[in-house]
Length: 217
Image (cartoon, one colour):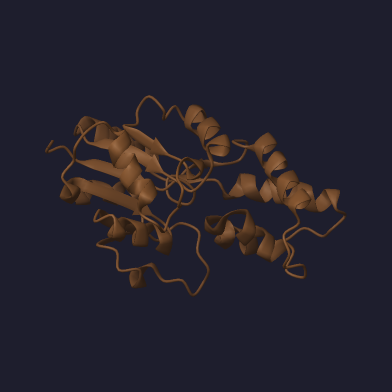
């Protein structure tokens, strides 16, 4: 078993701010359907809940998610993917620091490979990571611990779980980390509704900026 450490990250709302692209796709869809646009600040908190969360705001009068609308949204999102998203503050600085300290990192996301891989290429992350697990590569997504456990297995290394950290911006991330017996780091800057308090998630650590991970690992 290696004594090396590894830091695993959630993607949306933790490492990359993907909300602007997802909002752009929604705006295009609403325009196509001749519907009024929805304010960005109402959509952003729902991004961690995926398309269903976004639709709950945009189509609140229609709780049934029509498959054609859903698929159309995904197609639009794919076409605008990477146009307006960006790495969160200090993400590159943190990754460079982890590299300098010979600490591995990886990504575990509920996002499907179709939308994850282009972002990995855009930000030149593929060759830097030890492991990557997307939502369509597992039977059960977070908050189930399966994706996190799979990420560790795919790394090709045997880490002591006291040296494995998972950083996320949602309750489901922390629940998955705790279920996997990984050390959990909750970030406060991601996507969440007003009454969702990260301090109540029972994470081992709480951070306001990614660079603070340096002080933990």
